[in-house]
Image 1: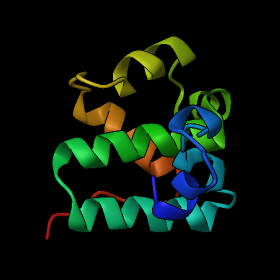
Image 2: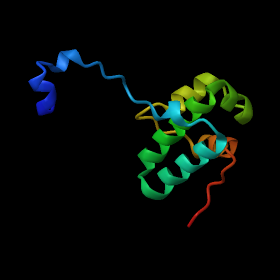
Image 3: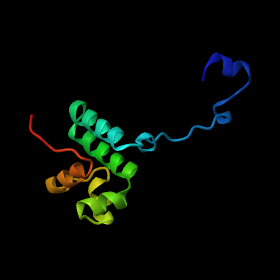
Length: 104
């Protein structure tokens, strides 16, 4: 908390902070593809899987399930933190966003 807030007699309890969710800001397919590309280029495998989960929530799990032929339940299980999704699941979800997994 800064000096101005303290000078006004404000405490941490006077501020309401909402949780940030990047999925709320991924509005278009282009936004999602850019987000996933950045995660793949700059992050770890865990970062990419987290980004894939976030992108799926942004687009809608039901829509991703329909496009991949997977159930919503299996998507949620595969894309939750600490999961180890199969390669074919990752490939299907990535393809649903109009991207291909390619070795570099």
